[in-house]
Image 1 (cartoon, each protein chain N blue to C red):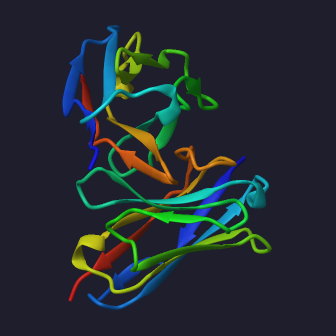
Image 2 (image 1 turned 90 degrees about the vertical axis):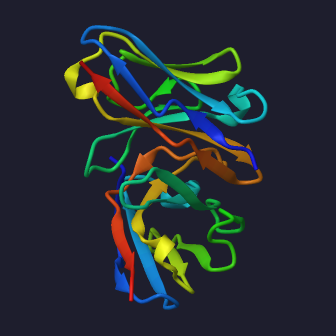
Length: 110
Length: 119
């Protein structure tokens, strides 16, 4: 069974840039996996940041961008702010109707 | 704007059943696939099921296949999740999430409803 991989944790300095990745235990991520990225703070529902690799959801600042980097999907946050401190999840479409989430990345801004 | 309101959660004993509902508004419900995603306490997100815009196709995660049934009533703009043979590991917040015309991962989230399976 293919596992979707994310860094368990990451830290970034205020104003800095960070790139979170979303990979596969076997194989490469491409746009055909329609990677989405979600942000979630404790006690809140997830919020969609990016869908279909690189399309920002309505109201999402352009500090957030999505791409394919090498064999992984990537979420890049530029000019990190304190309220970017959250859990970030990616999801990949595996085909045949099935989507699989990564385990999430806990981002610390300090 | 898109609004998704889940209901039907609560406490239930192992082996029993529960039906969740999701009332949708702010978009043409009958034109979009709809998903259920869950999150166990302190854990990550888990995709559960998807249904096509017209209800003709349904797909499930292995963890719920054969026990859960996703359905929709486009005349009522409502999505459902029938959960049978519930287990302790089904304890989670269940989110209704709006998808796209096809089955790609979804983008618009409800606030969720908590299901607790415990004796």
